[in-house]
Length: 450
Image 1 (cartoon, helix red, strand yellow):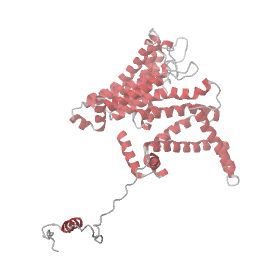
Image 2 (image 1 turned 180 degrees about the vertical axis):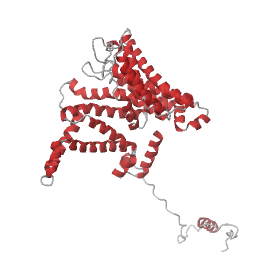
Image 3 (image 1 turned 180 degrees about the horizontal axis):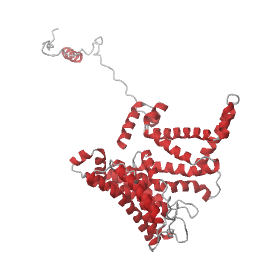
Image 4 (image 1 turned 90 degrees about the horizontal axis):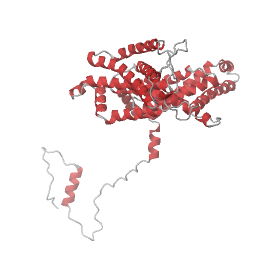
C-alpha cells in the first residue's frame, strides 16, 4: 500500500526524527478490524514510576553532614573543646608526668587525662547552665543567672559591630563607644535626683547618647573626608579610655570616702531591676537586649533604612547611582552602632556587674563584641545566640577556675578557637569530610557577611 503522506527527503531540510517517522506511519496505517487480534499494538514507552518524595527525616539525615551553618558551628565548638582538652592536659604537671611512662602503663595517662578534662568541662557546664547537686532555688538558678548577666552587654556590642558590618563599615570602636556610654550613664545615675523609673530611663538614654556621639565622629569623618573608620575608631578607643581614667578622679565624681580611683555609686533608683530576686544578679538588661535584637532584625529586613544600609554595604557606587545617599547612610549606621554600644556600656554600671566607675569597669565587652558579631554571622539573632555562648563560657570559666584550678585564660583561648574554626569553614569541612557543594555556598555567604 502506498503511503499517501510521504516524508520529504529534501536535502535542504533536516532528516525526520524517529518520533516523526513513527507518527507518519501511524497516520498512514488504517485502523485494524475489531476482530483482528494478531495485529501488534503500537509500542509506546512505559511511564517511569515517580520516585516518592523524601521524608523529612531522610532530608535531615541527608543534610546532617553537609557544611551548613549549624553543622559548621557545632563542629567548630567541638574542635575548640578538643584543642582545649589538650591544653588542659599539657598544663597539668601531674597528668603530664604520667606520659613519661605511657608505654609501660598507658592506662594511667589515659585515666588521668580523662579525669582532669571531664572535671574541668563538668565544672564549666555547672557554672554556666545547671548544677545537679544544687539545693534550693538560688543555687539552682545561679548558673543561668550568671550566664545571662554576662550575655546582656555582649548582645549590645555584638549588634553594634554587626550593624556596621552590614553597612560596609568595620567598627572597631565599640569599646570606646561603650566606655563613653558607661561614663554618662553612671554620672546620670548618681548626679541627677530623679524618681525611680524616670531616673533609670534618663540614665539609659544618657549612656545611649554618649555611645551615639562617639559613633557619630568616625561616621561623619568617613562620610565627609573618606577617613578610614578603622583608624578613627581605634584612636577614639584610646581617647575614651583615658577620658574614663581622668574623670573618675575629678571632684564631684570620685567617691569622697575613697582614696583610689572609683566614682560615687549609682543610686538604686537608676539601677536595672533584678529579675530573679536580690540574691541573683540577672537583671532586666537581658530583656532590653532581646528587644534590641528584634528591633535591629526588623530594621535590617523590613525598613527602608535597612534596605539602603544593606545596599550601601554591598556596593556603595551602585547604591549612589540608585539615588541612595551614601553619606547619610554612613553617618546613620555609625550613630546607631554607637548607640547600641553605649547601651552595652550602660548595662555594666546600671546592672549588677558594678555600681560605680572604675578604670576597668567596661572590661573588654567592645572587643568581645567583634568576636560575637563574627560568630553570629553578623545577623541579629545569630549575634544573640553567640553572645549567649560567650556569656556561658565566661560564667562557667569562673567556676572552672575555682573548682578545677584551670586558668580563666583558657576560656579566652576557647573563644578564639571557636571564632577561628567558624571563620574557616573550609578547614572544618576538610577535617570532618563534609560535602563540598554546601561548603562552597557557606563560604560565599560568609564572604558576603564580611
